[in-house]
Image (cartoon, rainbow over all chains, first blue to last red; front, side, top):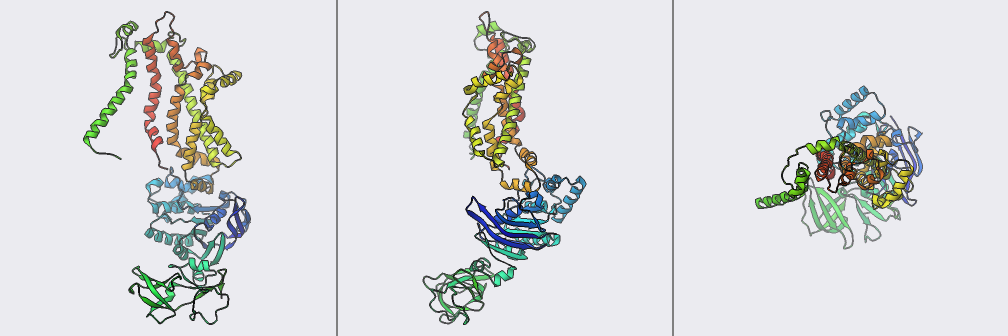
Length: 344
Length: 281
């Protein structure tokens, strides 16, 4: 039962490369925070700062109100699940899970009890004698989880733990991680670049870009009220459409209350509709249709130099390509200023 | 890539058999010659068939001094064994610890240390033998086992090989161990050593044979017959006062000198091959 507090956390490499800049984050007890962002945004570095694998250049890191900046990784009572699992190849599953307990001089009986209990919880109790190389990817993933769970740490850290699994297994493990985390009630930080994973797992979502936090909030807040253009484009799939207002010829579809200084309008693909050519808010030409079964993505070219607009239709609507069309807006329009900040 | 063609199979086997014969021939000659009497050797040319003496020469050599050698050969074998084992074990120990320091610790002049070790790769014993002799003599280690072993105990090659192996290990392994509460010593003992087992076995074989075959250094450092090694004594045996070297004994001793390295290779063959080709991490 622990809280985690990050205050103006900075990480600078070699004096000039700033990987993490001024990150403030309060994580409540038992909360699952997902940190998401493009590669190189500093999310993994942030996780490693919390784990103690990297030195904090500036700022404070507190667990349960205790400053732990200078503690060794083992002293912070944190468990981490790695992307490549990092299981000890020469040890059996049992020994892999027992290793941290052995290092803490836990009595043998206690180790046996906790390992078997955890193994049962994760349904790997019949694999305890095997070596990691004799396991499938999903099983290794479970063992890596088990190694973290068995310690009963204050905080779990997950570093893209599902990215080496195939798609169906990923969905299954995602749900299991969620269930396990809620059941154990351990404060967790989960790093991923997959926004579906992020949306489904998170109590609160942290979007990072260029070492900074762009926005913190529940998944639905981030989806419905993105604070910046970056968050708007990052959350949601297919991504939000952006229309450059400075170069748009006519914008009668903008709400009358549009504040001055708005530079970009963002509209989600599901808030657009195809209508007959000549009607609707925007005229365009269908350039390509991607049938995905449950839905169809239609790429519409507005002007010659404008980017493509993606319209999301239901799966049975398959308009012909290379046809003029009208596009109607039937949802919220998000407006951003020249710095990419959301306008009310 | 493997080809499946009967003609090719036959050809490769012929080539392999010829190759094996070429390698076997000198060994076979030594083995046969060791069972002949000296006169029969001197008159009969190459001895390709077993002679009349059986194991007599072996028993003679192992139990009593012969020719220019003042101690029975079992003593030489023991000395060689101690030296070879000392060198092999010492090289392994020192180089794995050095590689551990170079790969897993960040300290000042780390790369300088590595390059200093690496540069000594290019300095064989022969180059530094005079100063080495001086140091060992000053330490009073001439004619002692430490004197035989210590100057040959560091290995840049083995350090380099261990370093390369350590670098192939995923860095997450160290990080996981750190989070699991393993300090530097535990990480070394619980994770690095077990993972290096096959490499150590392969290097042990190579280093044992290297140590066993040492000639020049023991020749200088072991002037006392009690510390003479087998390989350096081979030549001494052929120094004959009456002009005819005892070739029958020389070949016998050669065969004896072959046995321990062969035994080491046979015993450790499985590990040896595994260590050289294994990539399972």
